[in-house]
Image 1 (cartoon, rainbow, N blue to C red):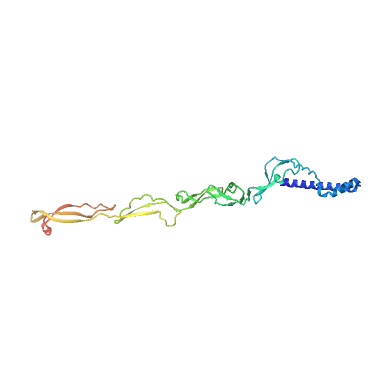
Image 2: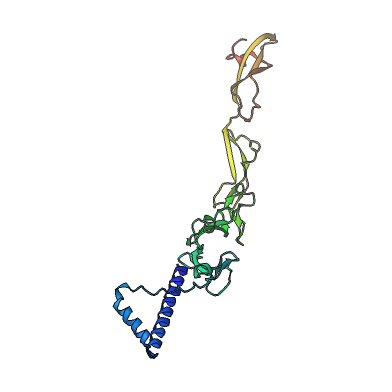
Length: 302
């Protein structure tokens, strides 16, 4: 387009120059005295005006526009504007000023505009990273989002149960932060019950035994011992005594009898669950003595 305008300007200047030249020639011809021959020739020309031919003038020579050579690539000048365009220039070489059009020297072209208004689009993840995005124009996906470090503090987790010192231990994951990774809290610790102790002596109806356990940081009244009991009993029974007479003998003026005494034990209950079981077993014992017959008249014969 610039070349076309340049050519038109050259042609216009050439026409003006030719017009001025012709005007000067006419003015100079008026000042010269005319000879008779010349006058006659003009009269003839006047009489033949209808056959006059236009004066031919030579066109002006076109001016050399020069040559334009591109010697470099486009490079952005300054920063990308908010509309996603920027000014670019490239190096060139021209044989004369104006040989290269302005569109070759500089132009506005698309560019990647990054506003830098980063905002979080995810929470801080367990790897200590979060994703952010920014406003962009004419940018590739890689420039729209980014991952950055962030302080991640995970939830507390118990490590085992309540320890024997009455403490519950906790741990948690911490990345990019100075927050603590461990803590303890008081807790109620109750050890398993120990083994049962020996039975106590039977009191005739009950006997007992106990066991214990360790208790730390527990509410008041938490049992540290436990007692078990069971029924028990001692043996029981009674003695039965009976007498009879036999083996009668005669002495001088007297009648003698042999009195046999029998002692028999009858057990009515055995000892149970550690109760006293020392009662005699069922059985009997006997003894005898001699008495006068008259004194033992109520004793039956054996």
